[in-house]
Length: 260
Image 1 (tube, helix red, strand yellow):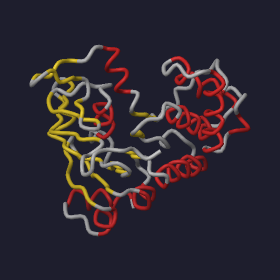
Image 2 (image 1 turned 30 degrees about the vertical axis):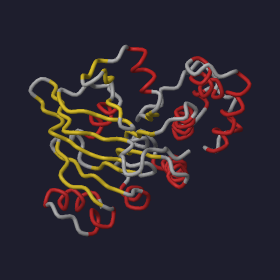
Image 3 (image 1 turned 180 degrees about the vertical axis):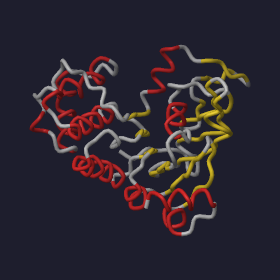
């Protein structure tokens, strides 16, 4: 499942991205590299721009300036000679399919069974035959511990189970990169662990992941790299050992003192 990329080339590169909503400057010259197989956790207070950054990565929000590259290719644009041209909607959709995104909300189809939620994308979008899609979906549901719920409807599942189905649904598209936007924040505390365990397993398998999270234990234990954001800026970044053990910036120290 690990993504491949040319040696030394980031799978994801974010270069000087800015985003404002009216007078609210949400992202300020944010730059970040994510290499194949890395798990990068983005932490910081609410309103610091973390979720907006993820949405700019897959162009759910279009940056006002700066660039995002996936596997060396600019998101939303194509090179023609020395010039960049905006992609068609179909080309952008194909590029987005290389990323999976798991939101705070589960966004499952309530009128479709669990197995149908997981097979819908591969069948409709990727053109996979129904039998193969179902076989792969059952493998993924087993991976997230929910094979026995394949024929259930989402409303019969707990929040944690629904979020694990959402993860399986994203994985069904065989993405190079997984984006997680606070995937446990809407869950009751006793349901958080099962979702984090699935994410830990993905990390161990080599999935490249960018995770916006308030789960400091997960960031400390699983991340290869931790990014602290505040006020739309990337304040500091480093290994979990350095960020949690010896942060250099006073703003990072004061944030961690409150949450740890």
